[in-house]
Amino acid sequence: QLQLVESGGGLVQPGGSLRLSCAASGFILNYYAIGWFRQAPGKEHEGVSCITTNDGSTNYADSVKGRFTISRDNAKNTVYLQMNNLKPEDTAVYYCAPVAPLRFSICAVYDAGYWGQGTQVTVSS
Image (tube, rainbow, N blue to C red; front, side, top):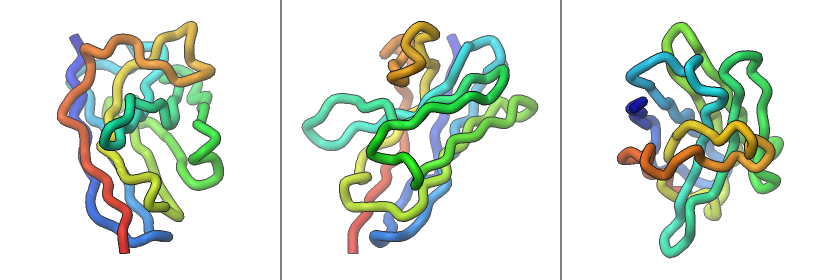
């Protein structure tokens, strides 16, 4: 099973930026799409953004459109999430995982068994 390691989180002030990285242990091209998800305290995992590995098509949750940008580097088997204009409500643990091909439109996770350690993002003044 593909292992994914997230990094790049931290503490940032509102309006600040962070760039998250998701490094895969295998070929991400073997998967239809990779997504970024987040889980705030007391809440379920939420699909934030996802990208197809083949042609780079993207999808974003309404709450992050215009602020977050997802990208991938197939040669490095890495997916990135550039987060700009961060808000306190973006505070969460961020995870990456494969996306269910038939549920790309909502960035649904392929299997919850892919959750790794995640990376903490805290937006606070």
